[in-house]
Length: 593
Image (cartoon, rainbow, N blue to C red; front, top):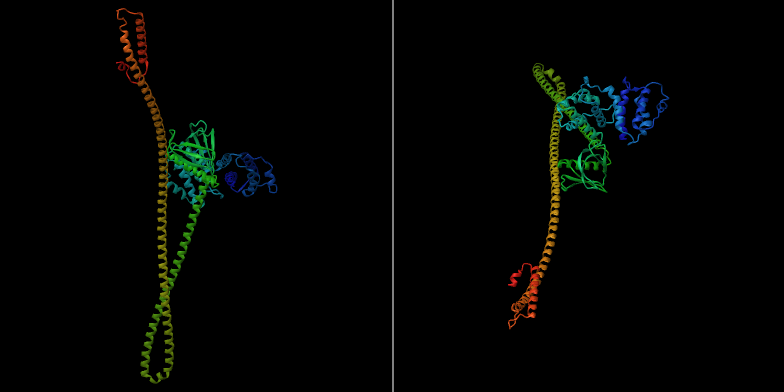
């Protein structure tokens, strides 16, 4: 349904561009051409007679949008298979049709290239609601312009934005794509920015929003076979993480499928790589290195967002963000409506209060008139009484006759006076009740204002507590990361010390073995030296004898000469063997001496 809605937006522009007379109808020949191109762009089999068969009961006149929609749904959109065509080709075809009629930069000096205008048109269609004619809410336009300015590293001019949004057509019906493109082409947002920077910024926003790319950039990746590090261009979408040889994305080296079984972990420094992290799946672990800590944080957050979208069954981050922004706008609209209703109710209450006050003033005025009438009547009665007294003095007899009539008249007047006084008391009681009701209403308004102030303070306190909680959570996460790093360093240090200890023990055992062998050799040499010393003493005696081989008679016997020669030879042999034997530091000369 989402793909059908996006296709209908582009096709709607193509249909309206064919309506040259703006009558809401298009000729069948033009619809045939439109349908043929849609068949080609959507990669579905052509059905040239379907249009004639569908409208065979109609006359040869043009077809309206409502008349073309059943044919479009039945013969084209119902046959569309997602993944068998490139939606950008459909957008290019529809843009080509509608841009010829509607997109005319003033004096040919527009800031945007045709490709940039096409990309903005696609982004506009993506952000617009499924209501025709397609318009964009001012909040969405401001969101889009902020993203473009952020990509260009410039600040959005609020004055220019307010001037554009405050225009009367925008306030009445919303912002159309052509008004939006004309506003961008004025160059008010791109002052001092080169055209190449504008193109790169629009392309980046297009890839992010329409291309559904959450994040792109270079990262170092460790191979699985040769375990060497290579720099790759990574492209993250809600369900996949592709990596390429370069940013032109021509040669894809692999794809990491993201699902609810995947997770992202930060790794310590190793193999000369810093800012490392890994993506773990059920079968493999992919190790990567970012250029700096900020990039590593952005990548881990983006991958976690992609995994969350995959778990929630959502295939587009910006569709989710668009839905949230729409819900916020609807919530603001509901609040505004509620506030207006509250103001209307307060105005009604104020009107009722004013009417009651006017009625009270009328009653007070009537009371004043009644009192004046009573005073006047009392004065008249007194005057008449005086006249009667004078008349009674003159005509006593006539007064006696009229006495009964006067008493009756006085009784009636007294009754009327009592009725007037009772009415005045009732009016005074009504005035008191109205004043009491007015005081109660004032107290109710004061209580309501106090409740609102308390609610506002509670909201502020809740926001402050939420900020403190977020700060504590961030501090806890930093402390956990620090503890993990210290634990890893201690573990590495313990491993190194264990290896050094084992090596020292091995060297100690070798030294002990050498010492034992040297002690044994020294003992053997000392034993042999003692034996040699004993033999030397014996030979010295024999040599003394042989040094005088001449007999008592002064004659040299043959037997004595032979023994002397033999001993001399043995002496030379023994001396040579002692000089060649390793005595381990013991001198042979000292032994012979």
